[in-house]
Image 1 (cartoon, rainbow, N blue to C red):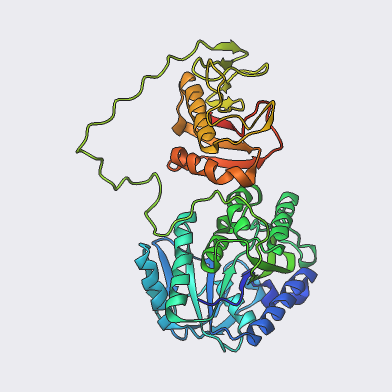
Image 2: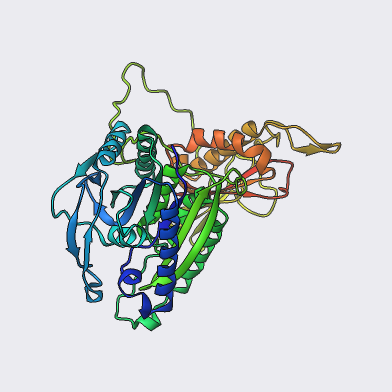
Length: 461
């Protein structure tokens, strides 16, 4: 498989139809023009577009009409004018992509109907990047209900098809970053990103893009979505990373950033590189074959050949102290706090645990050994420590009348990220693979006791 570079471009029509009405729109248009020359100078023989403006509901659709032709009017910005188009679609590759997607258990089909509408984003990208149709294209839809797992598999299917057909392809993610549009008329000269927070988060993301850290952007998509009104969860970036390779070995070039009708719109090129931009934590799941939506339908029959295991005895909940309606939780089967704090506090339906380490109740022994003693640093077993930490968390939750599967958020602290992340992550996955709690892992210089890992947990009561 050969990918000379990948692109992120916005799909709103303003840079195509009215670039001179706003300096930012003109900047975006200039970046498109630069990419058009770059594409023309490459030996690419295929453009693959994933557009967040082509919505599908039942699986994914791939445009396979060899020459779709129509006059398009954007449903929101029709005052900008009509866009006539006629494109060159690679129907053979569309079918190869379709078969690769189905082989990975995705619901996918090609569409080849005369007059089938093509979305604004795809039209804008192809008109500006490939106006003479010199390079054939393929367009794949954005399933509005698909989350990360399904979108990754869709991207990997594109990579399969590229490899199987021997093409030299440029994948193009047609998406904004933040996507909160103005809901009232705004004079073109007054266009701006709709909120300061959106703009701040866009710029953070662009800094990471500029360092070639595509997978780090992919990993941050959920956080970004919660903070900055992301364009379809940034799933176009999930797709792009899966097509190109889920790593940070790229040279990033942020060619333009400007508001387009309140959105944060950027033109970005990512070129494969031999050098990785830093070694970072990749927490998000990585899947090869789509297995359906989580927690929607249970399709695997429950085993009947063996009796259900007898549940381990659970200690009776400790008598809590109540103050101002806030319940203080102390668990007998958890290590004693080393300061003036409880194991947990219950506020309404939420439990907030203090930092939990691997020390054992009653004895304070550290499974896997301490990281240091009076003689200096010692070797230790991070997997044993991590398992002990999670078991302590479990004991505190059960003492509060909750359980591990009600954990919603975990903050992990490691004193040696480079040495310990892999072992910690392995054990963490054993407990939390199905729970899928949100997680942040932070490197710190030291903890109050000679331990290597500590967890801070929030759970439902």
